[in-house]
Length: 462
Image (cartoon, rainbow, N blue to C red):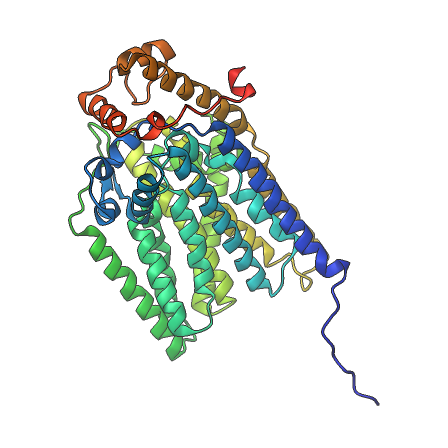
């Protein structure tokens, strides 16, 4: 019998299809999100930006921006990037908005690479990652109160951490995981990444069938994370940024409801209804079950790479939801529906998708593969086809634009508030430090003083 000679496969429609679909998804996602930023990003500081950019107003350097604490979190890498961006663009807020788009693009590329590496090849189903990650659900963090550090950069770092976790070379893997996890801890609510990393490291240490290399890896990762936490808490102070904050609240049972409502926002439910509570509660139980199952699989060394990545993603969202409920329920239960919280709930959806993808492979039964594929499509579609941000953003842009025009005409913040029926600091009367900072920007011809205010698109004017 003649031996079969294996040759490199020639690209066919079957091998080109995944690339075509995934590249198309990236293109659509970037066009939609980029168009939104182009039309709705206005060059004026808003709300908390006047506060967390304090080191820049004081002329301090990147280290001060990195360590600066705003509310319960530090600015970290986001603060250092803001220092560079604002000093090189005459304080153009739109530059930070575009930087956030770039971070989301990098995160989408990392997520797609993680899925392809876990499977061993790219699949058309991987188009779900750019469609989900590049969706406009991040609009509040990009366009309302622009803050790279809050959640968008932590999301990008988390996805890079998942990719680093799959590096085969142990020294390179440990170096990359340690560096990225450290940046996560210091950058906004990326702090939440520490919880699942510790859980996965402990599962590796206590593995039912451990190897010396695996134990050593788990021990080193655990040591690096604990070291990062020690550094983080040097000089840290608890600041919930809420007057009269208390724990626990009288209606303590609503901590769970708050978490459920946060998760329900992923599927477009943003009102206090029984449907939102039921769907959110059900999804919470599913995400928690997937997180625990993934840790058990790491402990048993069953698909340890995929299980670790899924645990990192779902665990980060669970930790974030829990800490947000702890800090924000004293405001009111409706705070759970704030758009800026959705960004770090997204890892839970990505973790579920990767978990489902373990069934949507040729070795699975046709029924299992079909159900998993349908579930992935539903998860992705509920996020991708939420067009509320596309309606809200232009209206916000028009109001910010009117305020900048009014201020340039009057040079008085309170008059600008009255004329535009809008204010860039969350109270009708501007405090003294905001007035002083407006004058500081004007003296140096920075922000909207350096350029003509951006034009309002036709939809915003309507």
